[in-house]
Image (cartoon, rainbow, N blue to C red; front, side, top):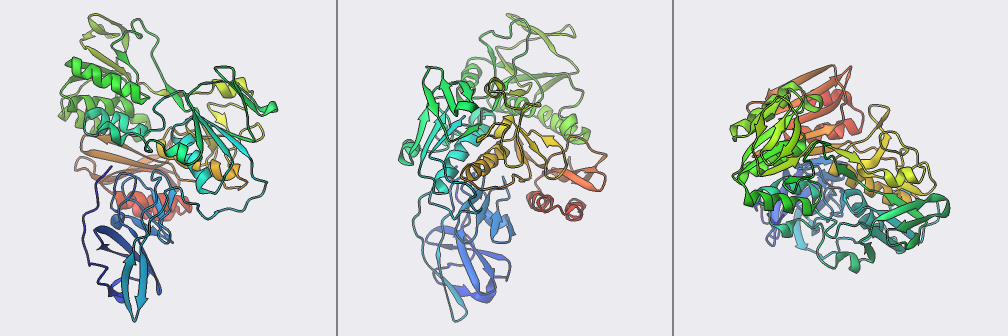
Length: 520
């Protein structure tokens, strides 16, 4: 996204008094047309760009944690000393500025140029010799993030990134949000510009992997080519579910996973005036909102009584339903489709919904055929340890297929979130180079419904009670999911600061701080 944080505060070329920057805090100014975030720790002052490189969120409204700043919108994390993007979803660093501190006055003097994949300092010691060849299967969130992090960590060996999707890697969350609604141009969707992977020595192969043989450290492509590896990452993602009902394969019926899928739905929306969305999942209702933005009449069919009740609870689920109804979406809950034909979508209740466009949004299944064929340990996902290693030596898994030990709630979890997948890919990259870095990031995702964004931090498969601070209907709230003396997850609407504080508190295991942040 190309928006820029609005310039405010002092002109830092002219300088300011050191005392104006709170010790341990930050101040926003500008230099040479760029918004700048100054931070201070004693006499040390750092200056970085104040605009997040993901969706241009204002870092001045973020949270300073040690020597990092976290973006309030989607929780990207940057080093305030180097500008480095430490954690997804931001992939590019923010600019840095040279700081002069003389006689109690702070002045900025220069904005050096930098490569987005400039080598980072290794954050973990290497315990094994570096590999020479790394293969990554899947160019989605986890795979592409891993490939980039390998180069950022200084790996100069061979990287092969394999994916049959001719457009990958791209910004998948946008496919059901602004891009589908017609509010984001297609040039915003690729994660990187043309030539980026070639420039950084990342070979992209547009094929499917037919077989993985861990004992031979080899994969076979669907054209029978064989590739060896020293380390391998499985990041095959998940496949959308197509219901097994008559008419499910008709041309007007669509799934949404790829850029091509989104393009097909857009073409169908331009040719029709009525749509039926099957499933009240996050994807399903984001699609419903996007199609309403395009002016279509939209019906949603789903078996549950309240959307998202199992994930977000009744109160927030009812609010989201009401929000969509305010925008003209019609719900048919407690019902399911039994067939799709020329007359539309026939329901088990006996009615029929007309629609030239039908979209299934009933969920996804982890794409595990390759892992199963290779004999990897499976349990509702590919089982990995805290370092994201599978049961096969030097084979890692990340993203939608990985089921890993939950550092905060115990047991193993699998989470289908874009940001989680990206962060796992970054951790895997360092571990493939010999680090022993435990994956313990707090899960985060966001879901957009018209002008309302719901942020969700943590992971709660069950809870004892739900506490609401603020007003859900007033669109200013935090919703805390309590389990005993812990709060494993918090959803929020327009309380970005609370969401950041909760993420930081869960990350350090400070349940009291989570309680306090969600009580006001």
